[in-house]
Length: 167
Image (tube, helix red, strand yellow):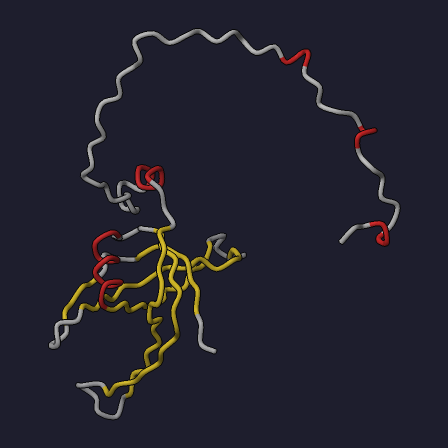
């Protein structure tokens, strides 16, 4: 099984491109915090994970996310290699997460804190008609909870052991 789930912040704006066959592809990098703090520097370390999305996922990630946006990615790990153009005897190895699913992990409040870099929810163009208050609203008397009965411990049956549990 090859399954990867990561959550972190985009290190730069996504890079959307189109293949020769017309399919969209988007590459981006996600900074994922490590669960511990470096004792020598007092700083939290992070891993920078390259991700690749295709088709509609690529277009939507490019549309809704910017540098600093929090994102959750689910996908599979892919490795590859290529020869260096300048030094033919040097081989570069790559590791990428190919995105199967993604989710928003930020809020508008995060957006305000992060200088507008985090996700802001898409808006629809639907305009609800203005609500008109009814001409006369009958006044309800205030609820008095003093006369309400909530029951007592005597209303419950005591179970003494596992054999008394009905399931």
